[in-house]
View (spheres, rainbow, N blue to C red):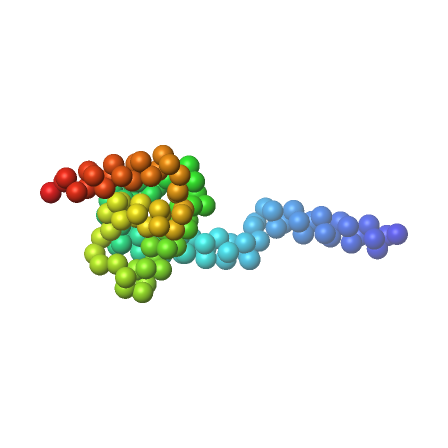
Length: 122
């Protein structure tokens, strides 16, 4: 009985110390996530123009899982050299529609408006 109580106290003390000082494995995981996020942001900064990044970040507030898919797709295209220069939001939106990421009638109307506006702007 004394050994069981002693073992329970050891586990409790270990949990308290890990909570107080943080688990070293947890810090390494956080650092890896931070580096990955920095790398993603730097690639997206090179690939997207300012308006496209702003619109994509607004979309991330509403649909984060879909935005992650779009970002992954753009990063993959950039890695394989399929993107030339900075990408405007109309191209990002077109790629989303082609892949059925944002497809519904409201977005279809918005897409048609965007195409009309982008063809009028010089």
